[in-house]
Amino acid sequence: MDNPFKSLPPKQQKALAVVGVGAAGYVTWKWLTRDKSAGTDTPPTTSSTDGDLAGTGVIGSNVGGSENVGNSGNRDPDAITTSGKWYDAAVEKLSNAGWNAQAVQSALGEFLTGQPLDSEEARIVRAAVGAMGGYPPGGPTTVKETAGPTDASKLSAPKGVKVVSHDSTSADLSWSPVPGATEYGVFNGGAIQSIARTTGTSVKAGTLQPGKTYTLYVAGYVGGKPGPRSAGVTVKTANKVLTKPVNLKVTQVSKTGAHLGWYSSTGGPYLVRRSGSSQTWESVDAAINLTGLKAGTRYSYQVAAVTPGTRTPGPWSGYVTFTTKR
Image 1 (tube, helix red, strand yellow):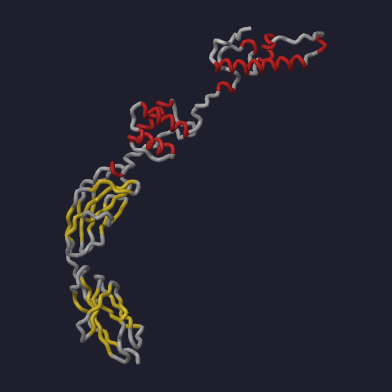
Image 2 (cartoon, helix red, strand yellow):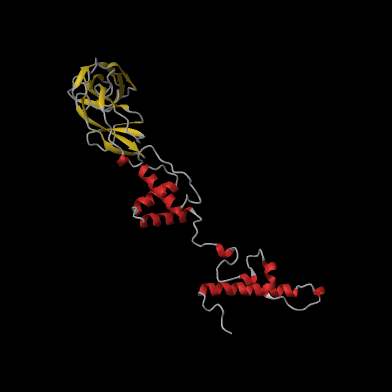
């Protein structure tokens, strides 16, 4: 007998064969467990089992050439069931449609990890949602868009930078806010490291030296990275007015040394010199350990503050005198 399904594709022939075997098995079971009180040993035909098989997914003699074989036959192995599959399919669709593949991968990666997106990244994600017919099955289901860019290089340079005031070691600056910037940094010339950081639009830039001219720049930050710098502003710090150190005190006197401390309202650094000697010693702090002294010898010292970066002293203090131990 000729195969009645010979003209069907192989995949459909295989599906019908599986259904046929299943139906035949079910028919045999029904016959073996038949109600013998009915007075017949004639096995039922396949066509007579349609009512019994209804609801099982196999409809007996009504099975045709389609592949709709039970509920399991409806499962699509390529169905988008995870965020990862959604990502892969969305990247492929948008890339095939002419979008930049790298930009798409970056934007969708940021989106799936819950990162804030700039306007271009948000546009890519919305295009992907449209192409895929919805958001990924595992979420998120909303686009988190920032008010400004998340890439520091896309920030605009601060405008309106001006020096509000200055003294011998610092300058106060202000500027207009930059959309998207989370903080700001002040730079001295072409230096890579900032000399001041703030989340506002004004700051005191310290660590400057007296009597010098500086060109300062401001840059907005996002993600911990600086964006383009502003136009430079020039400031010349005031000359430091040095005052005479006072309250010189000697402690911890030994045979060969002592500790000398003092106070200065203008701060250091300082020069220290001994009476009768042209040699001087430098100290950053308002104190110094004197060493190399002779036992039982009388010494006198005085101190002067100096302008940072120079060794030019201001007014010298009076002398403090002590005698080393014998």
